Image (cartoon, rainbow, N blue to C red; front, top):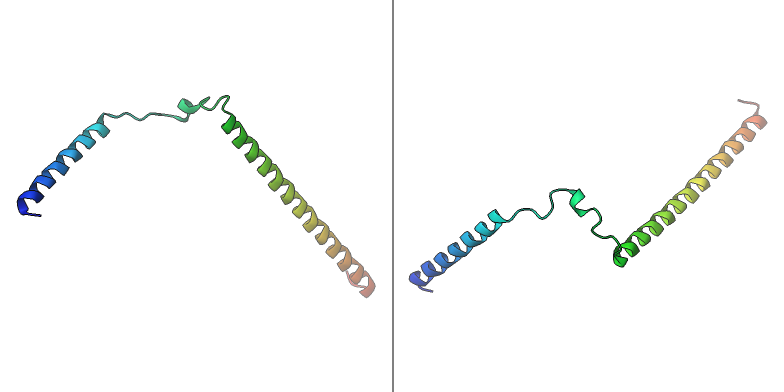
Length: 93
């Protein structure tokens, strides 16, 4: 490209940038608060399915976590019981 062609291209790009900046400056945010979004997905079957799937996943994770916790507590109780029996046999407290 010649210098003249480059200057013409730069001028064109600068004009385009000015236009885009002007558009952005005039544009106001679509939402100001989360309250603007409240109710947006009412009666939306896709949203309802997403909520159902999330609820099912959380319930499964909670159930699995509680089961793991119960197993750990049972193992700890067995360990304490074994230690207590061992101490009783050896005569120490």
